[in-house]
Length: 355
Image 1: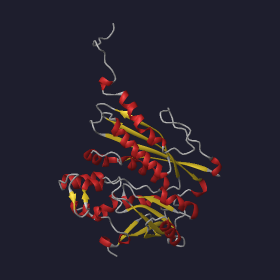
Image 2 (image 1 turned 60 degrees about the vertical axis):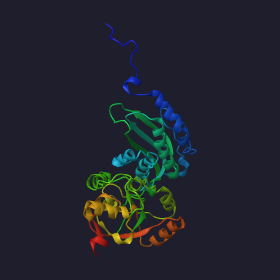
Image 3 (image 1 turned 90 degrees about the horizontal axis):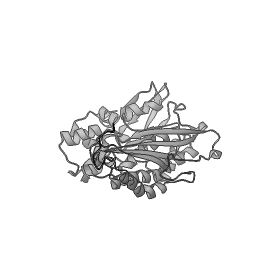
Image 4 (image 1 turned 90 degrees about the vertical axis):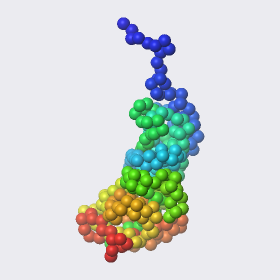
């Protein structure tokens, strides 16, 4: 017996999945994606897989380094503001910054966008942000997936994740194993809150303080949402030139877990660090979040980047030259601490923590 059918018959579109809209979104993003292609890319957009021909002649022992991440609840800010052209940079930055800290040059990136209802222009905005960030980081956007999941996400909402692959010379991998007491911590500024701690940010701002995204904050000189949605900074341009000239002993991407949980990830068992929080200017947004939420200062430094997005661990001897090299690139760099003897502890001093 044949199952009953309606006169017109059901379609995939009736179930909430619009293949034509998916094809339209691909057409809208093609130019953005192709603009990221390095010479090693062998495939075009729309294939089943992305092809990348690694030039192994440049390396004695090439090691591929991979990383994957998402944006987290910062996406809620994009939904609230209906602004989607910068959130893609957050996805790229969270991945490429993570592989950068191991000494890898980013090579290529893949993205995954899952939506409730596919709106081609919105998806093109998201992927456009991904593509611009890939281009700035020197990596190619060679593939991705846009999944329309009707009934799974509310209309207007989506999730985004990314996957990055880079390459490093095996002998120059940055592992932290050569870090010793007496080494110096150099800090590169963040662009703002980046992509971590937004569950607490939203709790403070929208539940506790009852702000809206368009609430003008005099201390910031802009609406709150505009400040919070500033994309995560990309660090490859600043850091990659250092790998060729200096011995970088360790690097730390300050993400979820802040200073207390991220710095120990690169420390040998016999090392701790002391960080002087007064050695760099703290962006106003962090002081405001602490004040608005009554958050304890240790909790702030365990949740947020507090103005330092990347830490570089180097010898005392090389620190001045690295500082100069960064300055020649127009990069700001702060000497924020020192490696000490210990057991992977992070000791914060200065400012609210005292001497």
